[in-house]
Length: 175
Image (tube, rainbow, N blue to C red; front, side, top):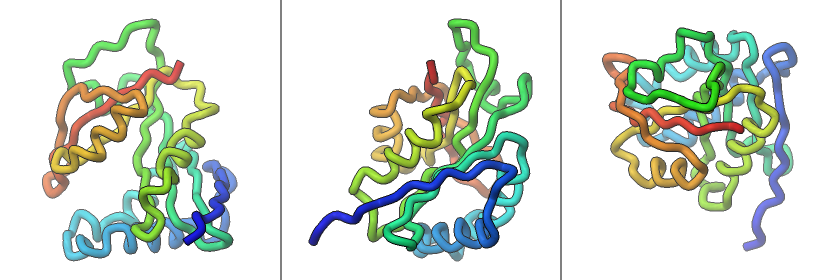
């Protein structure tokens, strides 16, 4: 089978197309089809609404022809309100700002083709913030290893919601 030709489209807070929310919800439903009975995963649309309403929200969506196959999104965190500050991590080199990568997701049929890396790097390539931060479910060590290969380091653990998994807090310098 020939590898897919994937195109990436970038979207910003003030230019989201009609149907954008549903596109993300549909990709999530496919990516987590085996976990959709979990109330935490059932609230994904709330997370999309929360993040996409943030000033500075940005997203990258991968398409195979016109079929959405994955996405990454996030937003800058307000200075002094960064949720990773509950860890022992003390940034150096004049840290002043953080971009939170909220989601990097690829539908099962398109996994293991490097699409998640393309989405992630495109999402971060023009960011002006000093740090990128994200959460990884601690029961997924392969995913944590992947992020480490992209320059992230685990700086602590956190459970942001009572019904959420325990996450590794991972931080990467952007400059």
